[in-house]
Image (cartoon, rainbow, N blue to C red):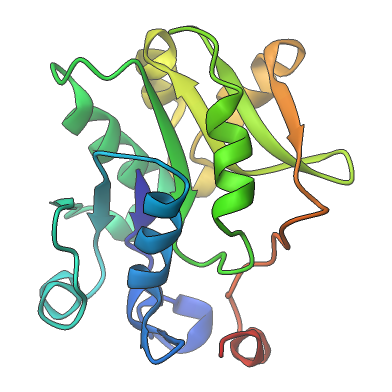
Length: 189
């Protein structure tokens, strides 16, 4: 699942999904990374400028979801995405963020490969610090969704179950920076 609903408030209201990276919208890069890591089917949660993202970005083959409450924060997007998985038979979801182009397919694949069962709780780690992407076994979705408020996303669930989180070191293959402020735009190619 790709969370791509952010409005880029600290970027002057430029929706993150539409920021240009390698000549295309950033959301396309994130979808490519997930595909290269073997993830699928891909659920993409849009919010800010959703119609423009749909018009400008190639999201062929993705389940594209609109989060009408995107301005509430990442938690609402996570809830929309998890709700879309109900009844699909999926045993786990790997959650990635659109504004982290320094995380490539190798890191995503490492996290994906750490899946064990429907109770799995896995997170990428960078020099021992938990980061993204994260993977939740299906048995955890209800609790994750219940705690997903504001910009916290799954942070509460991860903190409450810290002893159960399998950390997968990815610092050797990825850089977990976010594109949040105008100076961060220099990281986009």
